[in-house]
Amino acid sequence: MKIRVSGIILAGAILLSGSSAFAQTMVEKDTTVKIDFNDITTHWSGGAVQYLMKKDAIPFSQDKLVLGKAVSRSEFAVMLRNGLDIKIEYFKEPDIKDYFDDIRQDAPYASAVIDLVTAGIFEGKGSFKPDASITREEMVHYIMQAYRYKMGDRFALINIGPASFKDVDAITPEYGGDVARAQHYKLIAGIGSNMFQPKKAATRAETAVVIDKLIKLLAAQNRHVIISPDATVTNDSIEMKLNITNNSEKDIILNHSSGQKFDFALLDADRNVIYRWSADKMFTMALTSTRIEPGKTLEFSDTLSGDAYAAVRDKVVYLKAYLIGSSDSFSIDDNGYEIKIK
Image 1 (spheres, one colour):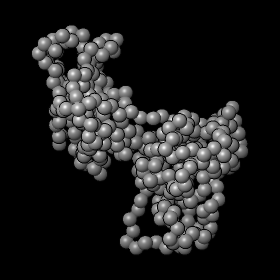
Image 2 (cartoon, rainbow, N blue to C red; image 1 turned 120 degrees about the vertical axis):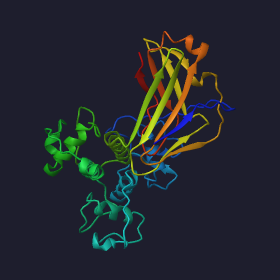
Image 3 (cartoon, rainbow, N blue to C red; image 1 turned 30 degrees about the vertical axis):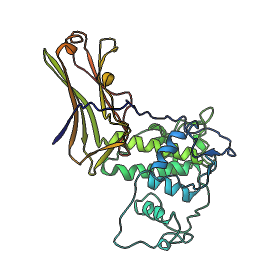
């Protein structure tokens, strides 16, 4: 089923949303530097931290965030469980003492630990040591366990060799396969001259970036949301379309920072823009949202015809469609979605 939405001109001002990027994964940083929660965009992990904050996956309540500090096992549990939405419903609340002997039932991280044990990511026995740090190789092991859980029947054990880090021999043998797969999927990178330093404690910043990369990897591999441009061309007009198909089992929400929800651009053979749908339009400065139910496709469309189309008809080679907004369910490509129409 498709829901069609045609172009509508609204009063106001055009506002396009942007996105921040993050830098490398494994980098030496000063552990004494404190970063203000409100000013983390310049930090190399800023984009990942901000995204995880929206998912309630940054369990640090102090006014200043020490991103270079070693992440504790309890902090890691909350970051991983909330970041990947591994939240399990139980008929009866499990007793944490059935899994670990050093966690209180009312501890703020207890439910995260229980969910990760139930999912097979943590092994529930003995002592959890919630305040202890977690090594890089342990972090990667649990990250890849989470990857297996989220992929389910779609998980494939790829046949690859050992990781290519110079200190690969220092990796605990039982973690070697996980580190190699994480490197293969570009979830981790080396320090300096390609050193992994497996026994070194993972920092909060490194953990946030690796989890953020895993979220993006899962989104790309599962393809629960498909975004595709399309065009219907005649001698007198071109109908420009942008389809968003929700193949997941849940509603997805698109958040828009203005009345503009989409845009179209027509490009010539050299990919120069010769027409932009939003160029002569004004949009409200209101926060809006769009809901797409499971199994349905939302279609944004508009038609260029008459003299305006005649002026560019012989030059048009590509159509580029843009989805304006953000979503916690999938990634939106700010560079647009392009097809060749001639």
